[in-house]
Amino acid sequence: MYRDHTKVVQIGDKKIGGGNPILIQSMTNTKTEDVKATVAQIHALEEAGCEIIRCTVPTKEAAEALGEIKKQIHIPLVADIHFDYRMAVAAMENGADKIRINPGNIGGPEKIKAVVDTAKERNIPIRVGVNSGSLEKELVEKYHGVTAEGLVESALDKVKIIEDFDYDNLVISIKSSDVLMCVKAHELLAEKTAYPLHVGITEAGTLYSGNIKSAVGLGIILYQGIGDTIRVSLTGDPVEEIKSAKRILKTLNLRKGGIEVVSCPTCGRTQIDLIGLANQVETMVQKFPLDIKVAVMGCVVNGPGEAKEADIGIAGGKGVGLLIKKGEIIRKVPEAELLDVLRLELENWEK
Ligand code: SF4
Image (cartoon, rainbow, N blue to C red):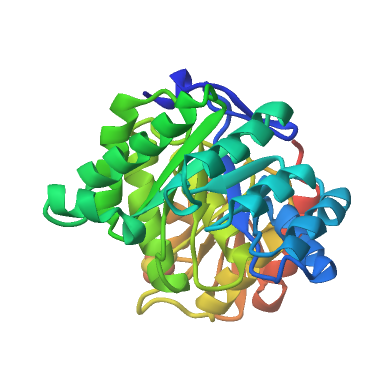
């Protein structure tokens, strides 16, 4: 089922599915019991553009902390539960806007029923999450290993358990660190369900490899019209996850807004510290709510031509650079002033 036709699910004040914008999620890595640290991290994530946040709830204290955390943040709060169904119930009683469980690891039917009953009373959505690392033995044997088919069957089995308790306020996620397996699982799952899908490549790795794996995996999945919320999982500061997720959505034209910086790869003609300048520009432009393209080029010979498709650009020279608009040279600028001149232009940009 492609995202325009998935079921609409309400998470706090946000709607996902049914063609609503794809929302960006992340997960805190603070101790949830530490309200101050968790709220501080969520605020940083909100500022970066995070739209739904998930916190782990391994203890009763963590479940209780959710209530206080929720009061201090501005985005829906999801509780991540493993093993103990009582944490799921407590999280919902303390205001979680959604819970993420794997019904396979929280106990027998009566425990799942207790969770579903609480969710039903409060109309709280449940995300049924399946990970390649915890696929049931029977499915591993049936499909001769961990496979996309096995993951899909596992997810749909779990969904069925909850549907049998007469509840369908659900979201599904299937995660694997194997990018192609993850892609295939989403293709198969999208054909079989109308529930919204939360998409991510799990345990993707550090900033470098995690970004590449996530961009490739999410790129293929999202481009096929599959996926209603996303998370880029990185071993690092979760704020980096948000930046990457935004960039992936923007690259696929699934999100508008924000300045895109294009910069040349440098070559033998480069006469300034272009790598340093491009990085400074990328940081500087983040605060401008403009939907334009900014070029940062390494030389005054080819720079203006190569920057033609950008709305505005700078090109570095030997001591003197250029300010360029739509490929036209506007004026010469002392090299040391290039960044400030560009900033001024952006501050006065007519929207
Ligand atoms: S813009 Fe100039 S410095 Fe950059 S790659 Fe092209 S020719 Fe080389």
